Length: 209
Image (tube, rainbow, N blue to C red; front, top):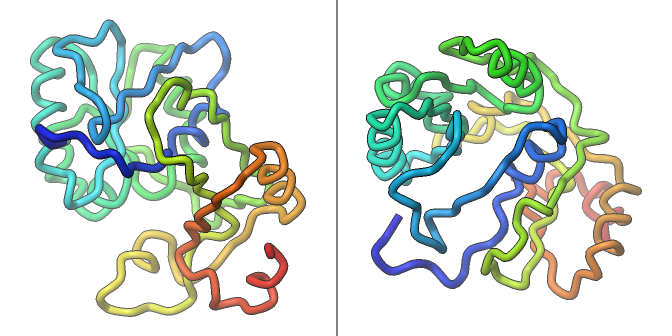
């Protein structure tokens, strides 16, 4: 993203989720523009990007470069969800909403050699049993602070906030036992709870402690 790479970046959990949902016969490799140089050419069939509004310009630059080399690009995240027409000027396909519910359909289309323009997230997808495969972060220089997600969303509809526009006015949670097991497995010294609104549900907030 910048000439000077960041030394305070945390693991982008979205890619750990997608890795867990991808069959073993599909090879995935992560490049993080925040912490490393992106190769001029990547030997791959498809490049998937998560795009925020503040990263959109850089994402478009990279997408245009790789598409000019004959590589298909798919984008997901807040920016493509809110500005799909603009995003499709720089991508072959986009995800609208959370990707978990339509990732399997996307992979089926990849195998068939045909991509839909838009993959729409089904409504009210559950994250109760969501898994994270952190192997995709191997040998990456991230902060020794582990991002942990317990819940997503917020019931409030503040006009300045993108959360309810993206997730809807609901809050959903992962299985508490899975979250605790994850913390134990990772031997976490420092954890960062990345929930959109951790304290909206007081009971849930205390459960994770």
